[in-house]
Image (tube, rainbow, N blue to C red; front, side, top):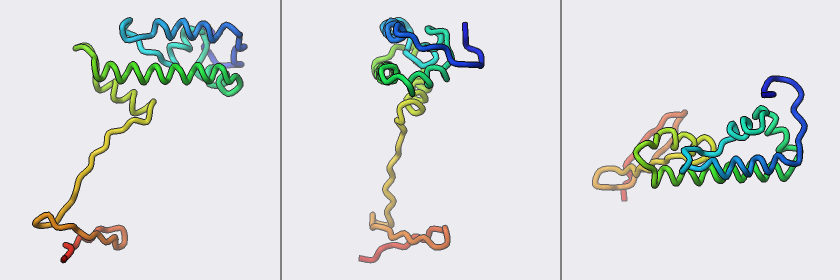
Amino acid sequence: MGMGAGRPTDYKPGVIDQINEYLLGAVPENQKIPTIEGIALKLGVSRNTLYEWAKIHPEFQDTLEEMRVRQKEALIEIGIFGGKEINATIVALLLKVNHDMIETERKQIVGPANEELKIHIIQDKYQIEEMKG
């Protein structure tokens, strides 16, 4: 299937059409989500070849970007509207790794009676003092 090491395969004009065909079928309704690996398998090339083509052919780069957008949209929809077979941990991981989505936690630190605290950094250690108003 041409996925070994060596010279990258030649880029052919019909590649975009093949990817578009793949993208139409790689939808949650078919139990699929579009991936770089899926495109590589469809085309019979390595992921590295796809990345090389994207550097050389702007239209190919645009198609890979469309795949990423479709992937993100599918993962969000599954996470929000998914059925009982959805693995939320995998969905969260893919969104974090591929789409820079992260969990954040905000905490407000206050002193006694909800007074503000003043924080001084001294030789890489924290010293917390109550602010006197």
